[in-house]
Length: 467
View (cartoon, rainbow, N blue to C red):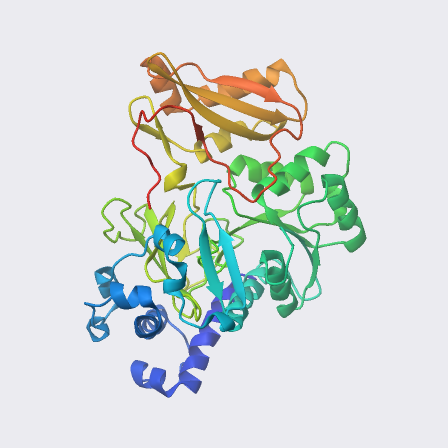
């Protein structure tokens, strides 16, 4: 299967490292590696970890202070990573230049952003030209899981300047021998289809919400199955099984999900054909899962907060950086046949995207996505929490292709089918959910901000917005 290309790509990097780096040959006590094992990957990670720790302590004012009491020689195994302090997102928001390990003149890309929604302080992430090359190398490897040489890839991502996400992905597509066509996000769904008809792409790459909106707004008036698209490659947001089915049925093609954060380096992890979690960029990242409250490292298959360490970043290495994304490392071998690569499970929620209702029960949008998007007429929805006497309220605005009372009734019924919602309603801690149908285009997002639950209550429950 194509996904073994990721495995081969990582193995080649490790073999090449042994070949050209005498320090690494001495570290692993090998002159060459024919068959790369999981133990070889772990040794590679330990070597790169010690190197990046030394580099960050020398070059970064932030890490020089944070690691002042740490001796790198004491890091003798990957288990010792737990002794290194975590890095919080608020710290790069407040002091981005203290993380920089190169001069400002060597920075080729500065990205300023918020992680989710429109709340929270903005962050800055710096990259050198070398960092960008590393990113596009993995983008090329990731794209090889769904495309082959000569395939046209239509990129429906925001595009405004050199080295933005669309431009970097285009460079990755060229590296794997594909042909990128950037159509951006400002075009109407009909205009996007016109470009599809002109360029004949094998792959469409877009955010989940953009791809779903384009599909829902055009599927009844255009023959999407006849467009010849082989793969929808979606990113940025959770894709529920019901949404995947709607997309697959509409286009008559497979759907793959990409996961990544700007801080990680954009191109980070991709689904293989097994569609059961993401293979991630183990050449450049070390991932852990920790208890979001205590920071304790969790075992494989235990759900917690993803934490990553960049192993090759030049401008702004991040060490044990908290993502606020909830997932787990999957211990069982992948059904695709990949033998040595690890996987992370689907990321369904972020810590700041969790709200509490009915006395403390946690809710998040992904738990409603599967229910609401199973209704074919729904394009998007927004959830607002409120208060009605002693009861919490759920107000769903649902953007639909056709405004009909039976659709609102179907959404209400779907929401009430969730065990937690039924329990809270029965206990009189939650009012019956309200559904308001809104016309096509009402909830179209004009920015890249991710959708959050809007909580209009006055501090009833502790905030889920950690630093």
